[in-house]
Length: 222
Picture (cartoon, rainbow, N blue to C red):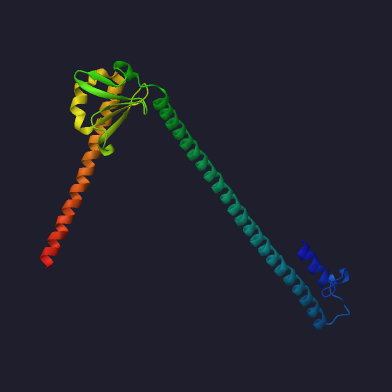
């Protein structure tokens, strides 16, 4: 240990003990001999003290290094986990974007197969009239002037079916015109829209009830 050796070198002259002094010197009187033994005890106590202090310092240094290394390790692990989560999130996001792009390309580029059932402008099936719109690759049923009333349904072969909620019963009469897969798409879309409209009505009803309650409270206060 460097610290001990250095201190030993500094104190060697101060507490020098020769081999000849390991046994009582007949020329020493009792007082001198006691002083000599005290010197030896002082040397031993001194080196015991610096050994203990040096050991404490080494332990403190080692603990500090371990904490620093642990902090660095935890930081690295955190960064790696964050990178992994970011990578997975980006991968899922990219896959979703690619799927949506494929779906949009399919709807846009694949000509609506139901156009072939009409004359290029309309499709009449069991008395129900669908309007063909090649600009957005769709066939529509009912009034399309209010988008909030229109249900848009992707078709399996490309393009979309647009239906006004007021014309759902007519769509039911002409449902045989569609493929089994498209019938499934239509029924799911109508069910989802019905649930959404029901939820919307509940929200509006709750708002109305709250407004009525507030009005009643104001009237009571007056």
